[in-house]
Length: 393
Image (cartoon, rainbow, N blue to C red; front, top):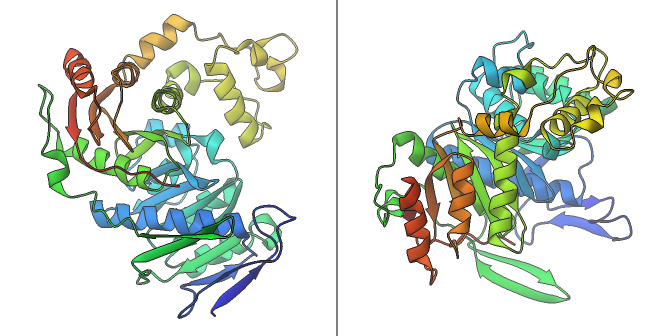
């Protein structure tokens, strides 16, 4: 198959629409559903991310994509009881395979942003992974293969319309890529930089020069995630999963704040008081996620006011005070942070420190590098200048 006609482009008025190959055949098969233009943009970008994560770490990888940027990305490390609880997978009867754990981590880290996502899996989708996918609101999934049991489960999702794409894992695109804007064709070499190269972490200008093996892995996860995130972008990672991604911001500090706030929410969801919230048994998954986010925020009265809390809880919970939240966030440590370009000022490090960042990888090359290094030294943060910029547009 050389081309596939689509219903429409980014918007319903943008017709005609198709994907096609100028030479050779498309490396994908649509096994179910009818993916659209944005679905394929998310699918092909997210597939590159998980493929590269698998190659760099040797671990199965998954990504949750929305509007051509990842909402989550992770490798398949086992889930703790706490993570299984906050990702709402602790009731699954099937043992969770490594690829299922990768998906649970990628989907669960920022459940609000992942609502209605497109999923990418580096490995064959098995029954456990398909069981988790079926429970969530999602547009589709791309993977190199599916077991018969998984395909049957996915074909039943969304009344049989769920998008299931299989991609040839051996496919390699041409080294030159092109796109058109306003009738003008842009051409550039593909970004084939290897982000698992140990030399990326050799230039360490900070006093603290120690990167643990886990920190190196997490920084690689952060950098590969950023490679497929709309710039400007910043990514916080802990234990092999992105816990906060800031994408498409014009200001670097706004990226760092946005991603840091998401990382704080991920950590606050693990607070014992949040894990014990007495939800009504009939509350929908999306409403529960939204309620947790509001409960954690400064707008907690929106879900705890009289006449409101009864919609969500069996009894009225006590709010978390600002002091409670600040004290809990301070317990988050050993977080890794990657940036797709240099930090122009030390304020980015100040904000990162508040969310437990101990390791940083960024391009370096700012006229204020000395201030950024000084701020890292202030908090004992180890920072590598990779010399690699990862802008993605």
